[in-house]
Length: 241
Ligand code: NAP
Image (cartoon, rainbow, N blue to C red; front, side, top):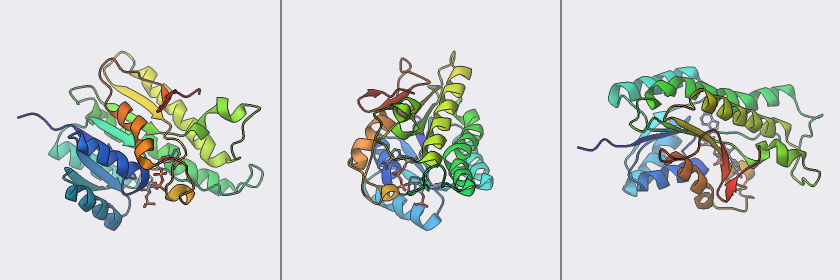
């Protein structure tokens, strides 16, 4: 019997995470659907199961290490490996604040989820990912807003949002560091920029659909052994750091 490929996605009860779960599920992956709210998570799981997708709920708040450890133990006991980790959970709290108006607490809270949460997930799951037949894949769902090159362009028209943007720039730095550590192994880690997508994060103002947003994430999750590592990609190609 063929082993199922297993993907774990954080913040997958809605938005880009849920659509990515759907797309990978349709490709035959067993989806471990991470959500911090049990009711919302189980609801999303039943939606996918009704679509014929093999899905299982995992309680996962990336800022609560107990939930991360519990998820790791469960995966270890029941499957013994993990093929793909998609660090999708993210928050945007800047609202209209300019950098000088931003509260330190908002900056810290944003980093707690968008950066420290991802690091904690990777630390916990790496031993299981390395046991994947293909060496493991991580996709960090970053943002074009994390591109220092785009932010510092004199022509930049993007909003000032220090907390969110710097958390995604830091996330990109994390991608590079892990990729360098594992560069001579089959393991691959990349950052994805899904583009400005209509979800609850921007109250539906985004101009792209979740289907469009998930394209680059799915592509990086399913890279073969010749695929890149330590890169930053949107669906049309590389994003400048
Ligand atoms: P969304 O609809 O607001 O979904 C965010 C998800 O993250 C929700 O499931 C949320 O759970 C979850 N989450 C938040 N904090 C969490 C925590 N501590 N632990 C676990 N889950 C947590 O937003 P989205 O647009 O789909 O965003 C998904 C990712 O794409 C984020 O990393 C975001 O930064 C990135 N992104 C989005 C856009 C865009 O335009 N939408 C553009 C570039 C990048 P709850 O439902 O419980 O709140």
